[in-house]
Image (tube, rainbow, N blue to C red):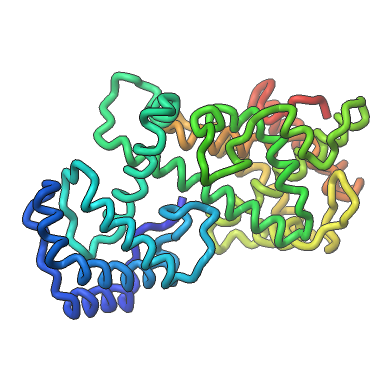
Length: 358
């Protein structure tokens, strides 16, 4: 879900230089009184140090500003660093507890503290389902830090946002997001209930059936409309899955990357499938098949999967549907049909199927 540390020597050198320049002593304790007294003396230095170090982390990609500032954040890396420094100092002055006191250079831990507690504060009182959603399957098992699964959940939403932005930019088809929202409505429903009214994530958490249908590219109610909507949703979901898989794949997965360049590349404006404009080479076709195999394996999951992993898995499963063969020319679709039938059968009934028959 995104890298939160960096081993780049230049990054480490920059940290050391900033630490030496600022010369901020450690916090004497994590108590609220001690923090306030410390910031009265060193607050400006801590702010300047964090501003520069977070700006550096955002510029190099080891942290993302959207995790702390929400997906609606728009601004430079320097602006993001300053804003996060502001919020961290405010949190240090106001939050009642700080159980551990990281070194000032350990910005990943400070970042997680800011994001996790922000999520808890935003939802713990008003959204009890959010804690239920992010707890492990064993309700009696230990959960040492409620902020970790909540932060993981927000990082998943940020990842979804990035993937949707990539497929829209790559294909030039803005309605893919709306069709994906419809196709994944059922899978996203627990998340929508938990994040009801959340200000940062908008449509990603909206699972109202009528609203998802109305916003889709095929909002009609007759049988033909429902069929087109199912097919559009499945094709959008597969494109989403392909981009998500490609981001986590080994750089040597040449076939998968070839499929990505074709199916996340420019697409025909005609719906509901929006077939790729580029010809589908043998390697891209092999990558299409590779993506299906990877999806089936990933969506099988494991008994040790936590709630965030299960949520991601259920959303990705929405791209496992026979309608995605319509992204291919008829000859290629025919070659893959029986193989796809076998893959879908191996998962059992009901997995990855839209609410309306395709």
